[in-house]
Image (cartoon, rainbow, N blue to C red; front, side, top):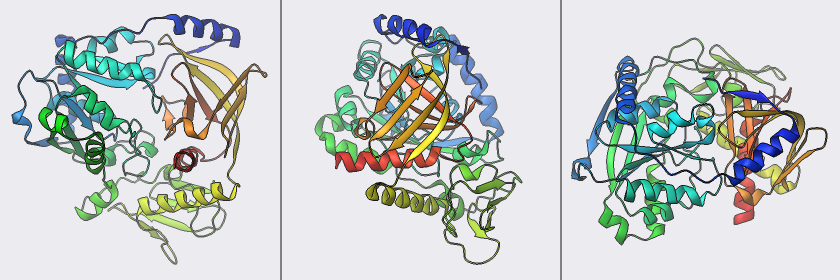
Length: 424
């Protein structure tokens, strides 16, 4: 999938930004039934290929026209097809990012999508969700993790989620998928694997329980539901993935060598991950575990390797030695007409947060560590490249590092760790 891009001058960008800021926020629209039927048909074809099945527990207690909040773990694009298939008889709005609206806003709104920005405080979003549920009588599909998982475990959830559920006052349904991550892991450059996909659909909270429970209790309950480990699930259930490309680009996630400590020297190709500095080589086995070709396997389990990298980043931050300083191509999103290509610049990330300079000194943007609990980062974003995105409710800057190695995962880890320190 690609996105519409335009080369614009910085002056043109500022003019478009002013127009976007003065534009009124649009209300959600009830999904067009014809479009929904089309989406369901297309989804059915894809889901048939993966032998999709699902189980429901307690969902029959919901009224046929009773709106609910559907929370779902986020693994890959097939998640949306799963939701459309499961809830085909229940009209629902879909909370999604503004970039998905670029070049097709009318279509996205007709399908029932509600736009927002990832990891940015958006009061208007809660109002839109309340309008959709209470005025339109529709359910709402939301992926609270916002970003796809890098290492197969849950990404950080917003601490405001319990407040949002409490404000809506409607039942909460949880959808958890199995196999969706392994079919199309983010690091693997959109190469699909032959993996069966299933789902569990549970009524997590009734409207009465939402009313009785405290915000903290609701938050804790939802966070518990989002505790999962896809690679452990694969190992424990004997799921075999024997595609010869399964380790392609795994270096995006496992960027640091546990043998020599070098960063940016890992190279994933075929079924192997190798450090081109010390020569240590690992195989990604068919059951999803790492195995050293020679010597000790420091971290057989990928999430453990990733967790070690997090600990290393946290140590660098505490010692004041963490710093990312890279040349980037800068794009910006301020409306749904197109993604604006602004030119070249430099992105710096250290203990003071992000600092972006570009457009021959005309663009300067700073983001403090306390601004966001996670980083909007992605691999091969809209087939442009690996990206680090920063910004606020008014503008998002998409920075594509040039000749900097694998820095996206580390930047996300650093953002999360700095936020924890600043917010206690």
